Length: 157
Image (cartoon, rainbow, N blue to C red):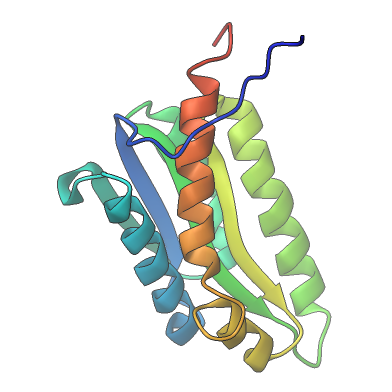
């Protein structure tokens, strides 16, 4: 029988950082609320959570990488909302924030969780930030907890 290694949602030790974009704040604040709710429900104390605000989603990767590299945080949760408009701006921002968040995790070895909504409409974003489709901020925080617990079981650093 193979050994199965997977993360759990047990209360993890360590601090968590949330990097939250101010742009599209009506959506992002719901994501932040969901993430805070998930962390608290899973035993993370208020004083073990830092919320760092950035102007927009494009700025998330740099700050996420800096926080992850500090080794102060068990995980960094990135929250933002990029909503398609009439120009190509959406494509550039969505692509760069996606690859930047992934690169921050790979560069530091710290879970850097992608909780940035990339939606075609405001309605889609609202649905994913607490309306019909749940709260993706809550989901991102659960992913962070699970990844922290998983990485602590794996060999190496």
